Each structure stands twice: as C-alpha cells, then as structure tokens.
Image (cartoon, rainbow, N blue to C red; front, side):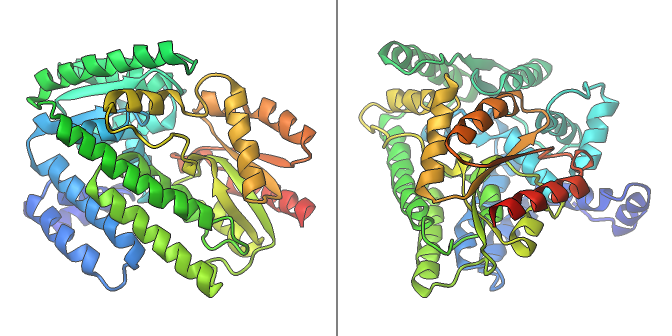
Length: 428
C-alpha cells in the first residue's frame, strides 16, 4: 500500500489524532510492513531485553490477525481463556484489550467520535464504545466466530453478539454460575465441549488432544515463571514500577498457552531477579507501598507518573496480576479451563474478591489501597463501598479514584492529583 504523507498531514490538520490513526491503519493492513516490523523491532538495541518476547509476540500476532486467513480468527471477551483458542490452532482477538492499546497510542478520541456518529449510546462502557469505533474505522480484523463468558462483564457478551449478528457469524455465550463446585464445573465443561464443536464448524479447526495439552503445558510453564515474578515483588524496595505492570497485565490475557508466553514471563522474572539482587529498583523514590485495584487510565494523564515520581507512592502489586487459578490439569484440559473461568475472584460472592485483596495487602506489606473506578465498569465500581468498609475494619486506608480507563476526556487529572496527594500525605 502506497503511503500518501501529504494526505495524512492534511487529515491531521482537520483531526489531530488522524496522523496516528492513519499510520497505524497502514501498518496493520500492510503484510510486508508487519513482517518487517516483526523482524526488526525485537532486535532494536533501544528495546529492553525483557520486552523483546512480548514485542515479538505482538507483532507476529498482528501479522497473523490481519494478513492470514480470517477463518482462523475468533473474537472473545477477556475471560475466555486464550489457551482454549491457541489449543485449537485459532487466533484469539480481544477487542477490550485492543481498545486499551488504542487508548495508549492516542486513538480513543476518534474512535469514540466514530462510535457516536453510528449512534452508540453514550452511557455504555468506553471499552466497548471505543472497540465499536475502532472496528468501524478499520482497525479490527475480520473473524469467523465470536464467543463471550457471561460473568463479570455483561456488556461484553451483548456487544460481541451484536457484532456477530451484524457480520452474520456465529456467537456462543458461556454461561458461568456464581458458585464454584462440581456441578458448576460439569456445567461449564459441557459448554466448552459444545463451544469446541461449534468452532470446528465455524473455522474448520479440528480438536487435537495433543495440541490442546501442549497449550496447557505452555500455560503452566508461563504461570510458574509468573508466580516467581510475583514472589520477587514482595521485596523492599519494590523492584518494579507498578504503573507499567498495569499495562503489561493485558498481554497476560492473550499470551498464555502460546510458546512466547513462556519466554515473556521468564524474561520478566529474570529482569526482576537482577533488580532485586543489585538492589536497584526502577523507582528510586519509595515512601509508601500501595495495592492497586482494578485498572488504570491508559491514555496520557500523567496521574500514575505523578504518584510514583513526585509523591513516592510505589504500586507494590496490582489486583489483576494475581494468578487465581491452580496449575491446569493437562489430562482434562476442558475441565481445567472451566475451573479457571469459575475461579476468578470477582465471580460470585464479594467475599472472594475481599479475600484476594486482604491477602495481597498483607503479602506485599502495603500501607494503603487505591481503587481506580472505571466509569463504565459497574461490577468493579459497584463493590467499592463494601471493600472500603471491610478495609476500614482492618485498619487499611483506601482511596477511590473515579475516572475512565479509555476516554481521556473523562479523566479529571487536576482533582484526581489533589486527592492522591492528600491520601499519600496521610500515609507518609
């Protein structure tokens, strides 16, 4: 595809974010460009070694999603285990994670505007509004099928079902009970068996027990390194900045079950171990330790940078980097993945999430808790009063920040900075 930089610059004058959008679009829809980036980027000496496996994975994934056969692509909500799709020889695409990546590189304003032009309701979660806009602008790949779980995010299933209907493609909803017992395991496992059969029809894939077991083996190997990484982060001073780790977590939803997942988590484990051994933390100014709940604003707000660099607040650990599932049983892969789905701490009673939070605060010796309440996420933000009351009884201070992970227009940086400053001052 020929790049007309004059046209790009002309569009950029009319829409400030169009330069980034046009450049990204041209790269995504250029198989040769993606292949070149796939080989060059990981070799760039400016790229730290622990980022190279993920860079390799991301660029190769993009090449396959946009340049190979679309019948191998499956759109999924974030709690559909990627091991299942890799184990079928398919390529998972997570629209919500892609929306966060788009926000990080400045694509959100145009995506939100595009969604509004198409009549998307303004009171929907911006992860899904941005996803709709990015798809409308040509950023999302085609797909052969769509699948969602019912738990945690109801809107994800609705949006994926609507997109499947619009494209005349099959959609499957995995109904997830709020209880974790043998009956629930049987129920979800049976649905995964049906899903596998449906995906075979929709994509031409064929269930290979050895390939599925290999996907679980790779996931278990990556999980072992991730557990070692998490264990290293209990050290004082904290070896890593939590802000970037809140961004890294999205990749974990995509890379488990893939061979690059093992390299990814091993590289992060090794890098962190070296930092601990040298007593050379990424963040030099560390006054208080915080446990971060939910997600972060992915656009350019400077909020977390202010917390870390100016105030000395270190994010010792993050809720969504907790590995809640046991080692996957390679002998019964679908039942193991059913257990992973059911076992999420936010599925079912709030007591499960509370137990995970209290364990994390104790394990990482945190002075306080911060909950970033994404405006559109009812299941996370709706629990904050219960969490705050429980933490108060345990003598643990908590700060709730209302904002938007995706839309920078909904992040009031000034007032949020003031609240963070006041909270840190009470803990120092």
